[in-house]
Length: 321
Image (cartoon, rainbow, N blue to C red):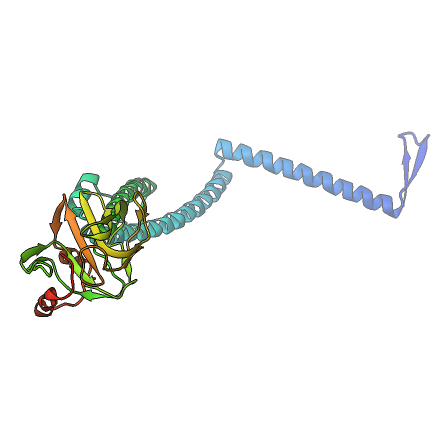
C-alpha cells in the first residue's frame, strides 16, 4: 500500500510504502491503544460515578456490592452452621463423659455430684437454630472450660483408681499355695502335740513337699529365718502394719529386704519346725495380732473349698502348732 503526502502548495510530496506486515502491526498497535484508552476512561468514569453517586453507576455499584455481601454472608452462615453442628456433637460427647464419669466415680469412691458442683458446669446446649458469631464464641469458651474441668475430674478418678489398685495389691487375698487343700482353719482346736485346746493362729494348707508357696500380696521381706517352732519361715510386710507369715517351708527363695510381687514364688512346702507333716502354715498379722486369713482370702475369692465339718475333721490330722 502506497501513501503520498504533499504540502498545501503541492510544492513538495513524499511517498510512504506500507507492506502487509507493517500494516497489520500498525492496526494491532492502534487497537491496543484504543482498548487501553477505553479501559482507562471506563475506570475513571466508573470510579467518579461511584464516588459522586451518579444514578445509574451508583445503582450498579450497590447491586454488585450487595451481591458480593450476600455471597459472603451465605458462606459465613454455612460455615457457622457447620461449626454449630460440630459443637453440638462435642457437647453430646461431654454428656456421655458425664455419664461415664458418674459410673467410674462410684468405683473410685468419689461423690460425682459434689465434684461437679465444686467444679461447676454450664454452657448453652447447641440447638438446631442458627447461632450468631457471638453466641458461638461464648459457647466455645464455655465448652473449653467444661472440657478442662472434665480433664481434672478424670485425673482425680484415675489417681483414686490407681491408689485403690495399689492398695488392693498389698492386701493378702492371693491363695498362698499353688496346689493344696485346707487342713486346720484359724481358731481354737486340739493341739496335736499336747492334746489340749489351743488357739491356731493361722491356716494350714496340706500339700506335697516342694509345692510352691506364693506371696499372698506384694510387699517387702522383713524376716527370713529358721525358727524353732515355725521352721523355715518368711514374713512379708505389706504396709499399714499388715504382715503375712509363711512357715514350715523346705526351701526359701527370698531373703530379708527383697521386694516380692503378688503370686511370686517365695518358698516350697515342707515339714520343718514344729510340724507333723508337709504343709504350709499361713498367718496374717495386723499390728502384731493374728487375724483369720480366711477372711482375706475369701475377699479375693481364692479361699479353697472346705466345708466346716470337713475342715474341723482334719484339725486332728498332721498339722503344726
